[in-house]
Image 1 (tube, rainbow, N blue to C red):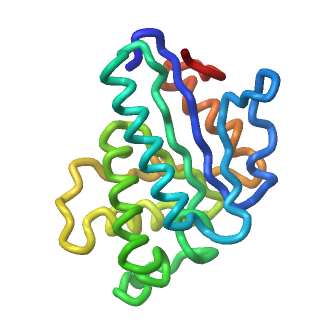
Image 2: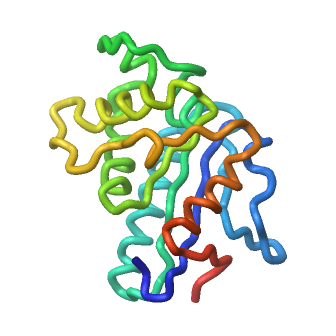
Length: 186
């Protein structure tokens, strides 16, 4: 918990209508949005998010009053490479769902530490969000990686949000954590 209970948020989604309504002061949004319009999160976007996460963590260590940086991700066509999810769980489905080995490594490298730090949420309009939580946990534990110390949980770190309500849900999650969104920090 931040000394001044402040937070900033970044939200990644493939559908522009889910990014509408982010509160802003002038041109500075309280929730930074990333529209994955052409394809799901690319290797470059994952590396950028990882870098942003690491910088925020370093800033937090250097200045405990710095706002927490929370990450919010859509699942279908943003974290995953497909619309919808099946629960058969075979290795070929895993690659079809999350992509090549490098993309899966980057996803694990980004999501695992964010989840452990309590700074990662998945918001989806997919009614199979319980299966999504399981798939994300399987991703974190895959490819002989370390056993996750924290797991995605449906109705907590993975939540259902009907189309067009994700910004409002982000605001509710931040408020429920006792944090206030800030536009900038200096």
